[in-house]
Image (cartoon, rainbow, N blue to C red; front, side, top):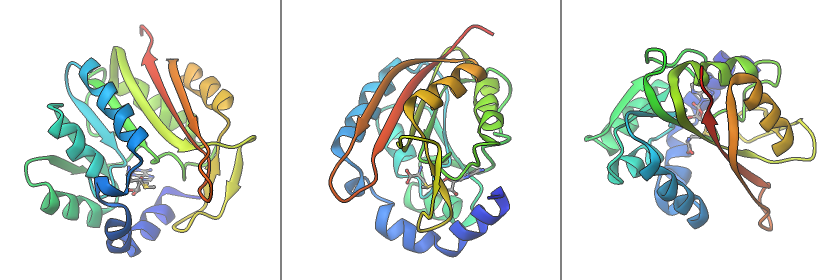
Length: 201
Ligand SMILES: C[S@@+](CC[C@H](N)C(=O)[O-])C[C@H]1O[C@@H](n2cnc3c(N)ncnc32)[C@H](O)[C@@H]1O
């Protein structure tokens, strides 16, 4: 699925997405805890890559993190700015984040690579690696599956990823996995998260 088609699909449903999922009340307590525990280790700027309506960006901001939300859907950037006027939001893509090389302490990519075709994931993880300083951190949230498999997500086709395969892709991009988390709640797709450290360049 090309990024342009995914962007158009989210543009068309941005208001609906924001009302259903655009607040911290709609997030899982364990995920809030994970992000809360991730934040103190970040010294410097962080990008929330694929921030949607900006609820996680604002959460990190409320924890004292210097954070900027980036998304390629103009409606999300506009809404996020209205909902969280003290937080920075910028239009941009995962494939080319608006930041210099090695400028970031960390990247949060919370369910934003789920629509990235497996043939393109190395490019996106490589872009994250370009932006993060040595020893910086990446927190990735995604749908977990037994194999890399496409499924019809409500907005646009998305992929399940085994943690082991994502670990391999991360390693190839220059990230070493520090921690992994998974959760299988009834009635929802299995969830995984990975905290990874940018290895020396
Ligand atoms: C499932 S939503 C997650 C949004 C937000 N992180 C959250 O947890 O609610 C996926 C987000 O990633 C963004 N996204 C997907 N592919 C992208 C790309 N190639 N460049 C920039 N944003 C992208 C979408 O616009 C959307 O906001």
